[in-house]
Structure formats: structure tokens, C-alpha cells
Length: 218
Image (tube, rainbow, N blue to C red):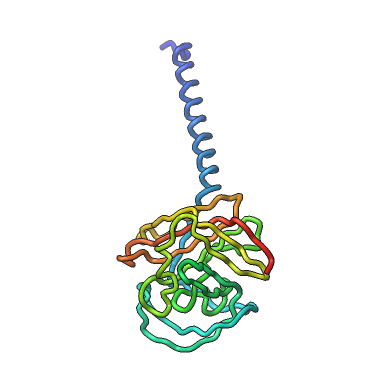
């Protein structure tokens, strides 16, 4: 039997297929790379307690202990914390301290909690992620954040500076997904606030994304 090589037409078709596949792979990698600069997926558990760590210095406030994810209180006990920083949203009367990630008490049953993956405002392109309960309990610190509109302002006080943020995105994420997709422009400082979304606290997270507009010494 005589063996014949590929015809010019067959060879051309194979080359075209290889080129198309190459463009598809390169294009996909480029798209994912660009997407990674704007979005990142992080697993946030609102009941997470990072455990014990060295305490930081800041102002002192008296708070109490545990409740469930809807904000209903089961038990209360007086505890004093040395906060590392403070979140203020004057338009809804919110003014609460927060601890460093890893400090005892850095959880949503006791405080506004700093979530895993956060970086503090002193970093060049920081992303501070704060979570708290939403409901009727004493620890439902984020109950009113669903009243905020685009361009609402939030302030973070941290290590002798105040950081002014503007609300740029209001979103939600289904809790059953096991994580939350967070908006993040890799060339800006961000603040993200996360809570359970009313009226069904167990279905969606409310996710508010802020971008830094100004920072100054205090």
C-alpha cells in the first residue's frame, strides 16, 4: 500500500485549527488576568473567629457577647476591647471600633469583624473587609447599611490617619455559593462591608464596595 503525505489543503486546515486554538488559549489567559485585577473571590464566614493574638493599642469601648447570624441575642456579658481602628458612617449614625485580624473578639458575634484576606489602609493598594450582623440584636451593627446609596461616604480611622471612602458598588451574593465575589480595582484602596441581606438573612449577603477618595493625618 502506498502512503501519501498530507495534501496542501489538509496541511492548511490543520495550521488554521492550531492557530485558532492558540488564540483561544492566549485570549482566555489574558481575559482571566484582566479580570483578576478587578475581581477576587474570597471565602467569608460571618461566624469565623480567628482566635487569639497580641492586642493593638487604640480607644476602648464596652461591648457584650454572642448572638446568631440574624442578629438575635442569646446571651450578653460585658467585655472591654482595645480597638485598632474605627469605622464611621455619619449618614446612618454608625461609629464602631474594630480589632486586628487574629485578636480575640474579632468576630461578628462581638464586634465589627476584620475578615481574612484584608489589608489595612496603610498598605499602598489596601482592601479592608469588614463584616457585622444585620438584624435587631445589640450586635447588629450593620442593620442600617442597606440604607446607603451610591456615593455615600464612610471613614476609617487607623494609625493616626483618617481614610475617606465613597460607595461605588452595591451587590449581593448567594450564601450557598460558599464564598463572596468582591469588587476590587487593583490600583486603588478599597473598603468592603459585608452583612446578611434582609429580609431573608440566610439567602444572600449584602456587599458594599467603597473606594478611597482622600486620606489625611488626624
